[in-house]
Length: 108
Image (cartoon, rainbow, N blue to C red):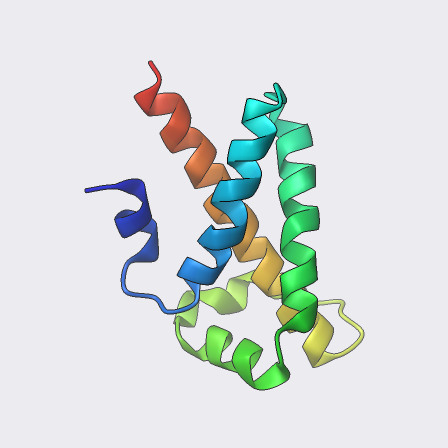
């Protein structure tokens, strides 16, 4: 089973995240950036922009698609929309960590 199929797992929102995460990681690694903290910072920046453009009903759909996603929502947010956007980015960062762990495992 490929990493994409394992992460996607039938979720209709993860492919959009992966279309941001994987090319960003690829371009950064090809540019010689291998420090995980720098990779995470750049991927987070790349995920924030699409999250800002997602309409509220899509973010609500993202939250409703998986009951575990409520753990990604920050508790001290100004409003619900900013909490949903932050949660979306937080899930993307978890996927990024999994992608880097997967890449490290198969490169050994």
